[in-house]
Length: 281
DNA sequence: GTCATATGTGGAG
DNA sequence: TCCACCTATGACC
Image (cartoon, rainbow, N blue to C red; front, top):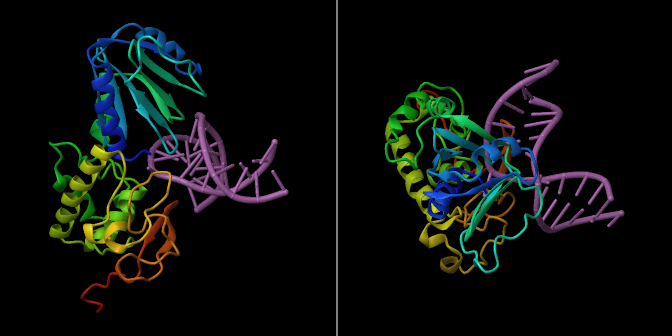
């Protein structure tokens, strides 16, 4: 689940369900129990995301900092019938927020801590611009990209360069811009970067709306191509992510896979040719 | 039952 | 660069 769109969607859902209301805060699994006791019964101010970081604010400039990591989930149920009441927690629920008609359960997160505003500010300051935040400046990220010899596929995943992109958006963005994952950052032109950024804003905003990652253009949807829809745990329609060995939706060549700094990278070697500088070519 | 896997990150060596 | 960690799920014995 967790790339930036997931966290922004979550922030909205949490604010809608709990913002301005007194909430019961608990840690059925126990690892957040001490902090939960300090917040229990207080008013939840609201929730906000920055990249993949989530902050749930409580009075007194206190923030529950959540990072879902690879496997974390934060399920929000805002439709509880007050007659039935909130159900007993199932599994390892690290954090539960609840009132009469809603509850939210956090499981498997890599981080769940009670932070001061100073701690929150430090993390935000270290993060790159987030395409899902209106104030984000793509040129801030560009200053890092244009000076780097690292591959663009690595820079896109570096949360200090830009915040919120994960393995799916990386693969899909590079495909949509016909760019090889190993192309060095300093060989990009600013126009290419800004086009990629604008595309990210559109794709990720759509991801917040739908809760899934869809990146294929109208002409490549299952309906348009007469192919079966993707059946997958995250459900979105994509060009290359986890499609290695299958035919590229555009050219038919088998999609490639290779590890790039510990994460699988997927691309089409025909649609995303290896970059050659003009001096060499 | 065991094992591999997953949209991520941080620490040790 | 490898490894640990957080948890659930599906594949396979």
